[in-house]
Length: 207
Image (cartoon, rainbow, N blue to C red):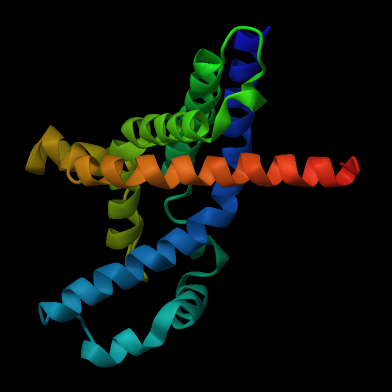
């Protein structure tokens, strides 16, 4: 029964990620554009120079809306879904399965303690980034290369371009530091979540 539960949580995370992609894509687009602009400005290649950096997130958003309309904010939506849906399947699946494996006989997963919760959360984070990193690289390239007024390159087009020009290793560049960072971060995240949930449940029950 418990094994079936972690699978259900994994699919629930994946389904929730589908809807999250619609709110995440516009903010990711603006973030990637700003990061690309700062990099180009540091190399003296940014059209408009340092003045253009003063636009900020809201300025970039208004520019996209004026030039491309609402659809412009959703460039990279397919790539974001391709990243988020399997990513959160493995994120919640990895977390719940690890909790299941770390639960001693005769106890529930809510009784495994802080240390094991952190480990389970860290494993969930490792599963997340290990599964989505190549897709994240492609998604970011699409959103950076689809500068205002240009047609956004497709997911497969961008993926094949990276493979041909930079090789498979380019899809995993930076994965190591990301995994080192995510283990304590997601471990702390789930510990905070479980602790807060327990506190609020006890509060509601009048304990």
